[in-house]
Structures are given as C-alpha cells and as structure tokens.
Length: 227
Image (cartoon, rainbow, N blue to C red; front, side, top):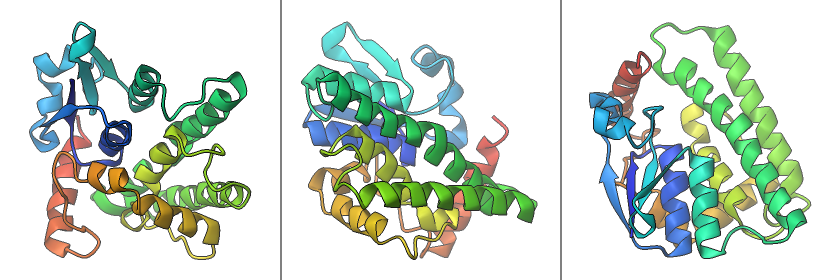
C-alpha cells in the first residue's frame, strides 16, 4: 500500500495519475497548502523541502519518496511499467520527463505566479513566462508530429507533461496552431486513469469557468508565495 500526501495541483496529479495507471493500491491524504500543513514538522520528516507530493511505501519499510520525477520513476521501477528496461528506451523517457521538470513545469508555474497570483501585474514578466511556455508547447507539438506519444510508447513522460499542459488556460498560454499537441491532449483525457488521477485528492472546479473558485484559489496561492 502507498500513502500519497498531495494536493490538487499539476505536481500532485503527476503522482496520482501514475498510481492510477500502474493500478497500485494507495490512500490519498489531502494536504491543505493554504494552512501550510506542508511546513509542519511531521511533513518535513517526509520531505525536507516542504512540498507536495510525497509517497510512503508501506510495503518497503515505510520508505518515503519526494520530488515528482523521483516518485514516478520509483513507482515505474517498482512495477516494471511505464518505463522501458532497455537503455535507449529508458533514456528517451527520462529526456522528456526532464523536459517537463526543467522546462514546462517551472515556466508554467511562473506564468501562473505573474498572470494569476502576484498582486502587481508585471506585464514584462507575464509575457516572458507565457511566451516561454508557448515555445515549449511548440517543442512538444513538433515531437508529437513524429510520434503518437512523447517517448514512442505511452510512458511517464506523457503523464508528467500532460498534468501541466492540460492547465494551459489557467497559465494564459494559447494552444491554437498546435494540432499535434491538441490531438495528444484529447487522447490523454480519454484515458480512465488520467481522468481519475486528476480528481485526487478531490475534484477541483473548473477555475477558468468558475470565477469565485478562481478568486479563492488565487487568494490561497498568494499566501503560499511567501512560504
């Protein structure tokens, strides 16, 4: 059994979608980021960095794993799925996984900060991160014009990138003119494990449609910027 300490964010979904795809039994424990639960001493013992998600593998001496990429690779290696065993295939998955962790996630995260959360509207910062996010989308679109999935076969790479790219409206990044990316987004959305995983630890309202929910989420996010 896996304990998953998480919140409804792209990084949190990376762990929950992976668990769903691998059909591993797990128990989700919601972490209220607005109350800084992730900074409490018990949580810091699991993740010294004070960030979600974290997993604890009860079947492996309560082994704790933090950082989403490390969690995903650990779970894939535990089951022998979503990660090829040959060096070339494994490298291809890791390249696109690192692409998300080093590019898509940080750039979209900063787009969110300046477009949605930061009290001052700094247009130069908004443009910088939205434009870079769009450039990364174009990289994905080009790759997906060559292959159905990012690393040839469906893998951790698709899960990691999708969990972030699917929130493009919240980041204010357009996807028009990217037919391969749109095809891939639609294909991912049809996967039962993906649909279920993004409702963990609970289903979030569509913040691009629900103005009240968007304002409340942004308000709570502003608090976390200082922690």
